Amino acid sequence: MAEILKSLRKNKLSNILIFLQIALSLLYFFMVATSIQKAFNTYLEVPKVVDVDLSRLIHIEIQAENVPERRFQDFYNSLKEHKSIKSMGAYHNSSLTSPTFLNNEIASIEFGKDMTAIKALNVSEGRGFEEKDFDKSQNIPALIGNELAEQYDIKIGDCFSDDFEGADYEVIGILEKGNKWFFQTISEGMILSLDNEVILPLAEEKEAMLHYYCIASEDAAAEDAMNAIEEAAGKKQIRLQMETVSGELEESLQSAIGENRYWLYFSLIMLVMIAAGTAMLVMARFHMRKREIGIRAAIGHSMLRIGSLFAGELLVIAVGAYAAALIICRAMTNGVEQFDGMLYTNGYSITGRIVLGGALAAVCLCVPSVLALLLKIRNLQPKNLIGGKE
Image (cartoon, rainbow, N blue to C red):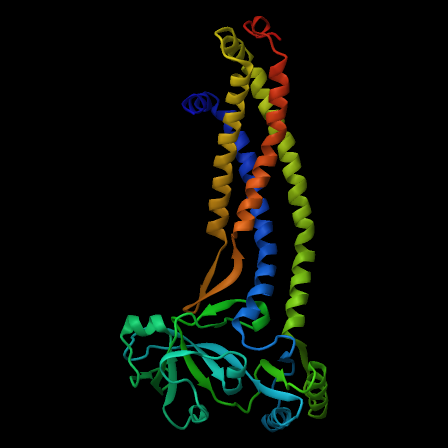
């Protein structure tokens, strides 16, 4: 190994060029792989977060703006009473501004009454939301994330105020560690940890929100519920789009695979081209060092040992390039983002399969060069190399 490192220091320029070729090609491979991984991650992880069959969960996106309150309320109430619909609700993310006892901006999620049918909020202390908690005439009850409660020593029954909103809150429960929800829509798969969040009840507003979620009844198909929604929307002249969450996830997966498939093909083609380019650089360096090879052979080094030296140099460069590409990609795609005080996973992360795939790609990049070296060295004679001639 010491001999390999010593030899590498003598040929810095060519080694740097080989290093950059391999590192950049592997980095591109990693970036494409993480994009495809994101689609699969969303498709696989979303069902683990919710407590309902996604083929029966309908995502409704209200298209019309400024829908009159009365018309929307009639539409909303008619759906909640329809026999094909089990529940219908909404949620959205916001922030609490300067609570007096925290003296900080704390992210929060307003959770609709019927959303507990989609995802239960498990508490370790106190209680969860009840029917009465959705009446805004009283102090607003709050559920506090486990880590947030520990950090600020929050207890059941503690009260605080939001100076900006002019609202009063009372802690009724502390969430169990590991509760999760979604940063945006469920189908986007940006999974939010609730350990550092505040959960508030979302009162049923008269004005239309952008996103609603509806669960089809057990004795009705999702298509029946969607037909009822479409019929009610038509009567109230409300424009909307809807799809089951399972359908949206499938569409998202196929779209991401389709969009990234050609980039993956291009990355594989680039790997082949880089492998050929690396082999050319290695052979050029070999010809520049024929005198060194001849001297080594003349003093008793076997051709196998000489070939192992050259191959070892290449493998050391490849391992370094692989590590550099992996570290850069890991820094760029750590799978976690923060917005408005909320930490969520976005799916762009390096997994074990990507790491192994990159290692295989790195090996494939070296194979042509190693084979070319071994074939060339087999036919060399020391007497023809001392003077630099073959």
